[in-house]
Length: 255
Length: 250
Image 1 (cartoon, one colour):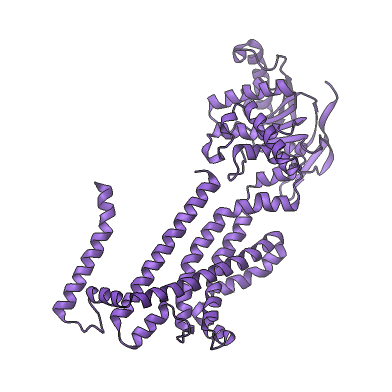
Image 2 (cartoon, chains in turn brown, cyan):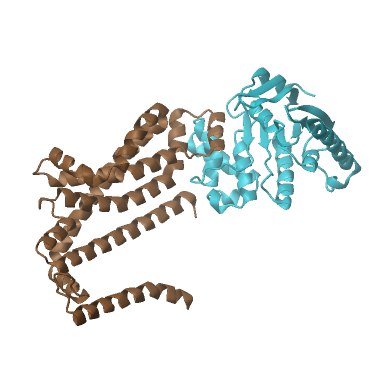
């Protein structure tokens, strides 16, 4: 009974808010360009489904490509850092600086570098910057997380550096890598949208561009439909990666 | 005693900032002998064990040890298993690291697991094992290289009384089959007397030998050994040495 209530509670809240919103729009006769009723948003969604899905795919693809690129770069650097303390020390301030600089402030610079004809390159590059840090810091702490007694055993049995890396350090890092990638997935979506806002010139047709475009035309219902698609996509991505992480951990740890 | 297989000779260990941790201390481990190191916490008994394992070097003095690959094995306080490997793969790890062909390593690992009574758990991961079972896997891993010296660093510390007693009997039974020298660290007097043929009592600050008691009884121990006068007398003697050692430290 309690469980059922817990499952239904968020749905009830959402339904209540939607009904209140719908009724308020009708009674107060709010102009649609200011606040369209939920029914209007749904209509806009239905009318623009192919366009919105295509845009969502663009945003998704850019986020995912960036994630892969960021993962490759971050893991490579983290590996080098784990093997060489001086290198790690040298990289640390730069990595932190990259992390604390708001991505939107970097956007104009990346736009110049990518060139006005390649907005997608700028978006991907910016998103890579955003997704880099959680993966890098996860990988670095993961590669350092090996049990010290297990390290001693490897000493005792005369393990080579390569054996230590492949049989101890990297497997120990797996849970940290999973966590880092999960955080990076969420951030890469944020990064892709922010980067497209900043760099967007219609050359990269993602959801952010749809939102900008609809805003410029005061098509608030279409704008909110795009927002809805973005929220659903974020939720689905997060859920998928959470499940992947859980499955991978289950395999890693056996339960 | 037969010729010693490992020994500490006038060994001292200084830690920077903490001063002398151990020594001067000397003792020898005969082949096939079971020695218990007993003492208050911080008396350097684990340091002595790490010296014998070669995980640490002495500041002064000489450490002789069985230094060949797999000749000395260590079991730590916690099972120290790799969580991502199955029990069999964990046990085979020392063999894998020394380049033993995989199939051969796995076969030996299964044998070692069977010897500690865990043949059925070969494919389980450490998280699926109880504390006592994980400790047995750790023991199997230590035995898989057929070591000449087995070093146990408070191997029972994290286990309940029933499990630790069962494990103590298992270790003695395994010792009977393969006769490695065993040096184990404990702060439990009864456990030391139950398992060891020689109990060395250490005093702290810095760690030195404060006494030695021979336990002259067959190993593995006969049924009801804990109630015999010999056991009581040896436990009494070790306890007295221990309280003298603790008083000296205070």
